[in-house]
Structures are given as structure tokens and as C-alpha cells.
Image 1: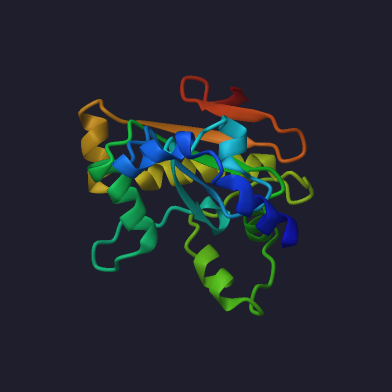
Image 2: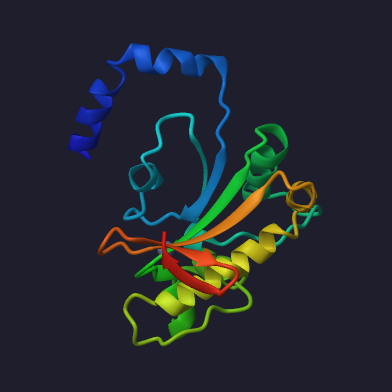
Length: 192
Ligand code: ZN
């Protein structure tokens, strides 16, 4: 923890870079990814403060839209799309994902009931070879499921229909730093 505190103490010593941020934010991208500490969106993309609006969840799961049950995830997505007017949404899964791995293996999660119940919402379950430590195939299919779920949000569907929003599926390799993107025409993930 101490190195993180030390860095935070000096981070704000560049007022010329940060002063303009007081005027507001206008990020172009909503970046949805896993809470995993190995995935650092700003490092991957080179984004500076104000460029990425982020939603991080266990297993980068996007809950289906349900207006009867407000959630922080839905609020974040709606705010990004309706208020901030982001033009792109990236759902970025990653290799070695603990959440997707647990789903693929069918792990017993009774000791962590909140995790168990959250992951139970990941339907259809990601599928792929459980013996692959990267769980690459499973994560990639899982990312596509989350993109479909985004379309269940009225604000997303509206902006897609208007042609003012684009969805992107990414797969990040934590052990190489490589990023693959889903190519809809071939339905494959290839190098970005
Ligand atoms: Zn993960």
C-alpha cells in the first residue's frame, strides 16, 4: 500500500494538466471491463484523465436492463450514453479471468455467496475448454454476450439505431499485453 500512497502524494503536482478538468468531462468512450487488477484501461489505451468513462464489474458482466431494479451498472451505462454522449462502448474481457474460469469449471462458490449470485447472472454461461488457463474462447464468447446485453438498454439501442454509437468487443491478454478485437464480419477476434 505504501508505494501507492507515495505516488498519490505527488500525482497532483502538475496543475497545468488538471486545471481544465474542473470545467467538466466529455469522454468519448465508455470502457467496461473486469475488476481484475491486471487490467488497467488507462495503461492499455494510453488514456489521460477525462478520456475514459469506466465501468468495472466482476467478470465484466453487464446485467440485463431491468428498470424495476436499479443498479449501479445500469446507472453508469445510462449516464455515459445519455448524458455524456459517449460515441463508443468497449467491453474488454481478459485472459486468465477468475470469474469466467469459475463459470467454465463450475467451481463451488458457496463460500463467496455474493460472487456466486453475481456470476449466476452470467447467462448464457461462457463455454470453452476448462483446461485452457487463458480461458480465451470462453472469455471471448462472454464478451459477445455482454455486447448483446448492452443492446437491451433502451438508451443504447436508441443511439445505435441513430448511428451515433458503436460497440466494440476486446480481449486483453494479461500475460502479453496484446489486445484482440472482435471482427463482426468474420466473427473472430484478431489483433487490434
Ligand atoms: Zn476477470
